[in-house]
Amino acid sequence: MRGRYRVTYPAKHSVGFSSIAIPLAKGSFCRQLQSSRTSRDRAIRMLGVVNETRRPQLVWKYGYEIEIHEVQTEDGYLLDLYRIAGRRAASGQPPLRPHRNAPIFLMHSLLSSCADWVLMGPGRALAYLLADAGFDVWMGNARGTRYSRKHLHHDPDARAGEFWNFSWHEIGLYDVRALIDHVLNATGAARLHYGGFSQGTMVLFVLLSERPEYSAKLIDMQAISPSVYMYRLEGRIVRTFVTLADPLVAALDAAGRREILPNRRFIAPLVKIVCADGNVTVCRELLYDVAGRNPAQVDDRMLRIFLGHFPAGASLRQLHHFSQIIRTARFAKYSPLRSTGRGGFHASPPAPLYNLTRATVPVVVYYGLNDHVINYRDALQLADEVPNLAAVHQIADRHFTHSDFILAKNSARLLNSILLQELDQYDRRAPRTSGNV
Image (cartoon, rainbow, N blue to C red; front, side, top):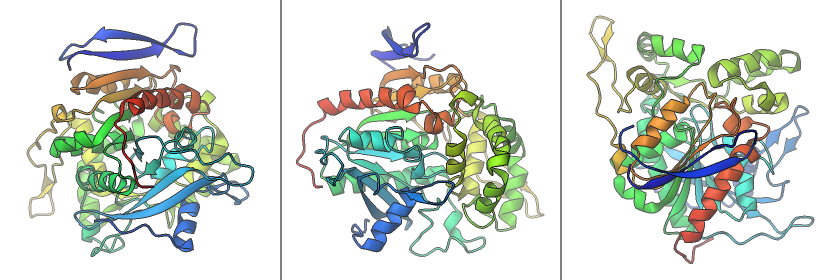
């Protein structure tokens, strides 16, 4: 890293931020928009939040214009891309605000979907806050999630089929690239803002390492709990999986089980039973082990809603790839297991590292001190290695966990307000384009 960047940290005896500047030291093909009512209803159902009485609390009801686009990747996957274009001019709602200069594209975390950005509802969820501020909000869904289980030739339900032969490398190289290009083509913008949470950050670093010219299409990257370095991960459940990953993956792959935790069949009914009103403590404790413990920020009702959308599905290889970077402490490409021909397997040689120095986009990093998935030291290691670090923000709650970035009661104040300030700075400097809306 070169030059200077901003660091924010909680002021003593304060819930706000203080800012300082310190010297940097090195070391330490697209389908057309589906405009039918069916398409719009599908978008509404996806973006809706279902409460305990199963009455939909819809984005449309909240007064937001929504669209669904289907985007085809170079390798034939069909991805749902959702757009919240802003508030519509309807009775009882303020007029639709003009868009800012540049759109913003949001990418979700592992086993999740673009529901990450809307579940907390208006006034709290990042997507709504961005739309209220005048941003043109686009939300991607990676291949294999409940909204992107589609391919031109491969059946996601085929046992041992080709559909699931991907890791987060392909999500970065193909999905993120196609989604960014679609947003720019649809809006006529020259560049866009990028916001990623956890896996949503690492897939952009994959793309920029493999296709560094894409930095020129980005104004900035808002890296929320970035999952690049993860070897200090604390959760016992995840640590156990990492330890057993190779034999477990080999067994599941041999059995043709290449899809992990899809949000259908037994998962959703199981969640309803385990996380019912009287049993929500069980789900809380599971969340605490994986993400970190912060009871003051947990809303049991929102937790149940979140678990209605999570897990949203992933590939076996995707999780195996995660286990490799955790175990080896290397941000590297996937190393497939090799069969010995006698029912056994052996690991491949170490794969090449991704080149973070090719990611020349300005990067803003957000981290929490009690994040069990992305330890704050791992986040700071990434911050130390990117070539164009713009700012580092420590969340002003020393108990802030991985799930709090999406579900915390006070996430609008602790995270989203700071992120909006960062975007506003970059947006004012972005070159004007006519845009197509």
